[in-house]
Every structure is written in structure tokens, then in C-alpha cells.
Image (cartoon, rainbow, N blue to C red; front, side, top):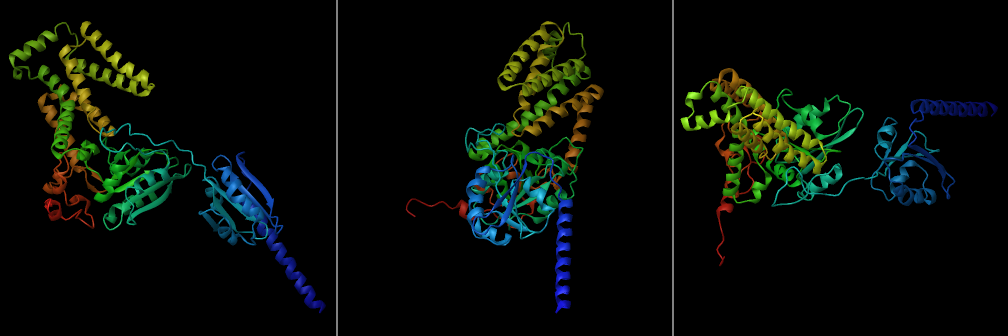
Length: 506
């Protein structure tokens, strides 16, 4: 009997020693955090006398949730193990785990860590995030007179809600990933199952998985990191702040990315012509919408070429200018000491300086600077004889035309590529402009978005996809989804049903 007692005592002693060593190892693995907003509080259950502790980060959790929804049940409820917590608490998001590596990830994302003294090695994470969001507002960049007046905000859950209420179907799939070694930013990938080409989804997921970046502060970071060509000035994802546009492209078979902390969603794959499409076009008659799209294309072409053509004509090809127009140009340039290229560069750079200053200053001051600065500087430069009044008009019209692009980022690209055209026009005149245009066209043809042709449907030519690009035909003519997306379901609605119209007697 003494032998068995000694053996049992020895086993108990070894068991306690192992538990002590395990506890010490856990304490070594999880040193106490240095940050003062990390709080730990210990409590005792009034029914069982069991001691438990709560650890949380006070700056990211809502203490009202702890006081009202968590603590009362933990102090007075009947539970014996960590596994009973999910049934005890009126909180939907409760995770039970033995993986200690999740502790820091969870508590710094708004979870409360629950530990029980009799259930060592197991942890319960209880959701108690503090949601600090701004109210919904109208779109500022993609503002429209007709249509919804809701725009995305910085909270990812609220943005997902704006899309989900427009697509209340089980086929809308949302997959969340975490990006950034320091920021731990949540990125949501949205697509409609049985419509989207899963190759596009897999391409995005693979590119995100291999990202090795520390801080993701906005969707623009993701856009640049996932781009097919990092050296191209053209955006390869369509940026939007409109939930209605995001929901609409999901129905076409595209993929939408929403980044936590960003009020803009990314759409891919995209094409060059889509950057000249305003979503308000779909709220207008197709004839009016087509007119506005063609007007935008003309405006962008005018914005790029008008000053290079001025420089080329006055430097090399003045004999091609009609006499009446040439007389006006000569009289306007009398007393101007600068050659046409320097004259054009001075005005172009001045316009860009005014635009940049107006964008960086507070709204009211920026508007004043833009208007007053443009009038004062323009008038003073003409009166001082530094520039001609004809070129001043051309540059002002070019700047105005560049603002017709409905997507802000493509507007920046259009303003940038004017300068290479100016330089080529000074070097070789009209031949230089043609050469620069060929370089630009070659770049656009070779460019891709998620492996899809960026210049589609112009190249490769797809006649059926032109129905909703630089022109927009009626809805009854757009019964099929774009060909370049290679969707699983190519038909949006039966075209015969769209053409059939019921009589009043039917």
C-alpha cells in the first residue's frame, strides 16, 4: 500500500511540475505588453467562486459592451469551462482557441481575451469593437445630379452593407484577407458566384498573398501593388466611391476590392475606355449618354493636343496655318521674348501650380486662390508680354477640358502626358506628335489589367463590346455581359423579353 501511495504522490508531483513549467513557458511567450492602453482585470464568479481575467485594449473596444453584455453574465452565470462561454454570452462573435499566437492579433483588433484559472491553455476571444465612423455623405468626386447620393466611408463593414443591400443574394461572395505586417488591414474581395471568371479572383488572391508590405493605409496602396505594370502612368484598377457603381460591375462579372480605412473601392479587371464613363450615364437616355461620352473623348483629345499643335505650328509648320489665323497669332506674339515651347511650358506649369495649390489649401481658400490667381496671373503675364493671349486661351481651355474625365486618377494621367507631347512637338513638329502618339498607343495596347487587354474593345477589336464603351446603346441592346470578362453566365437577361412590349389590353 505504501508503495502505491508513494507512486501516486510522485505522479501528482510530476504532473504539478509539468503544469508549472507549462505556465512559465506561456508567460515567457506572452510577456506583459508595454502599452498603457492594454488593460487586464480579474474577477470572481459569484456562483462558483471561479476566478477569471479579461484582457483588452481600451482604445479599440467599446467598454459599454463589456459592462452590459459581457461582465454581468460572467459574474453571475453558471459556467465551468471556456467552452461554455459561447452559450452563456449574448454576443455572436465568440471564438474559442488554444492557439496563443492569435492573442495579439485579436485583442488589438477589438476583441476581449477571457482566461479561466481552471482551464489553462484555452482562450476565449469576445468581440467588443468600438465602431467610430462618419455618417454617409454624397459622393464628392463622382457627384451626379441624378441617382443615389450615397458614398463609401472608411468603415469596411458599413461599405459592405451598402453593397449587400443592393445585392441581397446568396451568390454574392465576400472573402476577407489581412494585409500589412504592421497595419493588419482587412481587405474584402467581392464577386458573384456563377457569374465571375474565377481566374480573376484567384489572380487577385495570389497577388495579395505574396504581398510583403508593412503599412496599407488606403486602397491606392493595393492598387499600385497589384498592378500588372508598375511603371505605367495609367491606373489599372477603376477607383470608385459609389456603391451603386460597385454593385453594377459585380453584376457584369467583375471583382471589387474594399479596403478597411478607405472610402474608395477598386474594380478589376478594367479597360481604358471605362475611365471616361460616368455612372450617371446609365440614369440618362442612351442618346444623351452617348453624346456626353463622345464629348469627354473629344475634350481629352483636345486637352492633350492643343498646346503641342500650337508649338509645332509656330515652330515648324507656320506655312500650314491660314493667313487670317496667322495674322492673329503674329499680332498676339508681338513683344513676347520667349519661343513657343517656353511660352507653353510656363503657362502649363503655372496652371498646374494653381491647381495643386487649390487642392492643398482649405476648400474656401483654395477656390479663391484658383479663381483669383488664374485671372491675376493670366492678365499680368499677357500685359507684361511674357505670353500671348491666344496661347493663354488654349491652355485655359485645355485645363478645363481635362476636368471632364469622371475618374480623378485618369485626369492626372491626361495632364501628365501633355508634357511629352509638348517636348516631341518642339523636337520634330507634327512628326514628333505622331511619333509620341504611336508610343502612347503601343503602350496602351500592351497594357493589361489582371491579365486582360486594357485597350479592349478597340484592341483586340470586339464589336459587341463597343455597345457600352465610348457609346452607350439602350438597355435592350446590352443583353450580354462583356466578352473580355469571360463570365460563366454570359447572358444578363433574355434579349427577346427585352424587345417585347405589352399592349395595354394584355
